[in-house]
Length: 196
Image 1 (cartoon, helix red, strand yellow):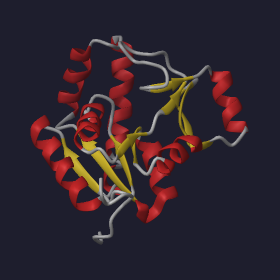
Image 2 (cartoon, rainbow, N blue to C red):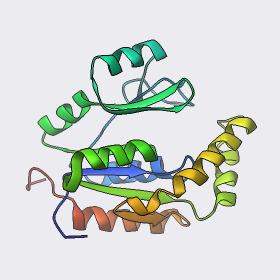
Image 3 (cartoon, one colour):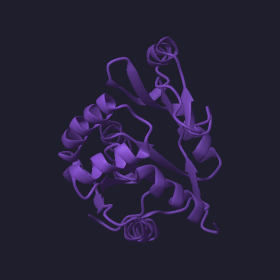
Image 4 (cartoon, rainbow, N blue to C red):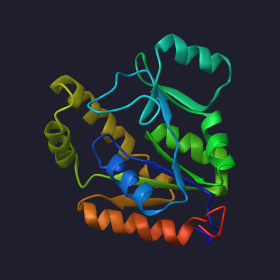
């Protein structure tokens, strides 16, 4: 991998691997980042807020946006459950002179990586094991057992895509993984405004 500076950060991981926590830390550490808010048709979880964590849409609204060509990438992750990245989000962030940080699923991340090419730094957050991932999903307490099993089966499949990313961080220790991400960002990302 060459040392050319990237201008977009894409972070993906199986559900429960700690991606959202790591993204949150990067956002609070580096002022040049702006979170790219994804769209989803799933219901909000816990304290999630529309327009901050996600844009929560109905399936009909989501499909209308697909038809209108509003998405940079979108997919049906589970039957009837869509996720996608709006083109308008990228415009909003780049016009503010900031770097988009994407917290997306694995297929969405690879689609974004293909779109942005060498402008992107794509990082895969890998759980130490599927057993550890199971524990984290159970302890999170947000999903029913059937949903957890579905997520674990999907996670196993998603982990097979890890080699297609620029970097892999194994999140066996949050502090260590956070430091690894911090170092990669400092080395590989270029703020649009150098005074930031």
